[in-house]
Length: 157
Image (cartoon, rainbow, N blue to C red; front, side, top):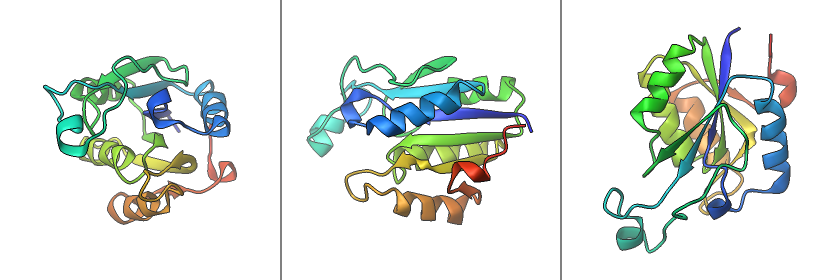
């Protein structure tokens, strides 16, 4: 099956656990990989004014990826979706930070683009509301379907 991995916001501002970074890095080395990083631009997304918080202005992805796309807000940029379509993949494996916000937002964009998103729940953490990521995984399963809960469920051929 032709697959790519989309790594959402694994960057210093979100303090990802080291094992998460390590395990995503290992998997990303085996597939076409795309990552997002959230950058702060208050003129685009009012994080500071509305939420009293802002991501770093120059965070980089902690996971090496074939392509990295900067985003402002919860959703991946349209250029990322276009890039994934050019890879002609059968599904996009999704993991990263904030299962119940940014990861879920990416799922909506991928689903609407026909890119068959699949959540890798063991490589995803939630927001401060639910750090376990279980809320996001339940929402994902309800809206998009496939949630893989362990590396043993993943087929790489």
